[in-house]
Length: 319
Image (cartoon, rainbow, N blue to C red; front, side):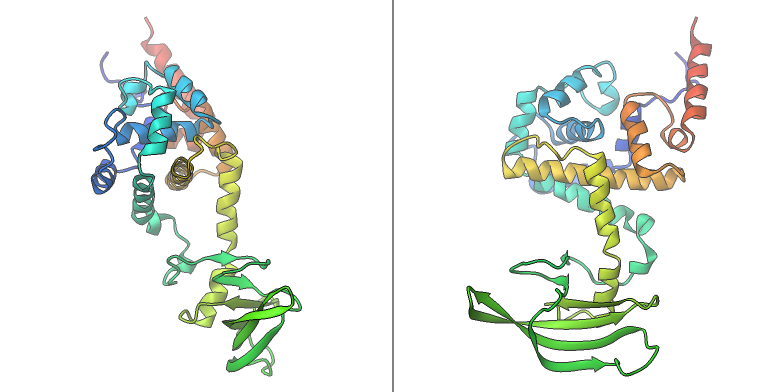
């Protein structure tokens, strides 16, 4: 059959996978020697299989492998000769080092960061930062202060509380907080306490053990914590993490990184398509048409119009 401009030659999943540079997969594989000890399932085949499971919302490896079986006529487009057996995937999830998936994810994040990131966060030094809401915890990096928290001020760095109509950082203090076991103080933690007033007039108090970042950056990071909450909300609502595809820590981490990859790929594709669809609606449409032959970006932007265009093109080719 000759090339037809109305017909796309790759299924939706294959077009999603094209967003991952093949060089990144190869470099990650070489870095962790991922094919050296587990040659029965090459890393790329393993990655593609698990991403299929994520996008098709498989709750177990049996669903995943049997789902791929149903696609065997199209697997060549994904670079697969055949559908991996459930036992093969299970062994690979337990034995292949999850860090190769971690490396691919962070490689994707590095590649697309400037394309998808919020410009308000540019310049913030937040590598390896942990942001935690107020709760009873032993170790932490940034957190909201609990009401009636008992602390002792050792040094006042900034105090603008007497200035009327002043916004931003009102006060920065060095404090100590008692750590008790039963009723006995066993340790005193050295921390920073930052009092912040928003432009809307809301006042917040943050406590951190980070003495390096400027106080205004600590406040800005916590103010933008909603993006982190949105990420986890998207993941929990749209991807399979209720059931794990293995019982080992390695298998669980591997699945989590595949879910993070899928979420990142969808954010990139959604922005490229300039669609008004919600994230959840876009994921649902893709899940239903994962192996359909339609142009992905057009399909996301106007699903009905693109599908009719593709279908009519196929009808025109029929004898």
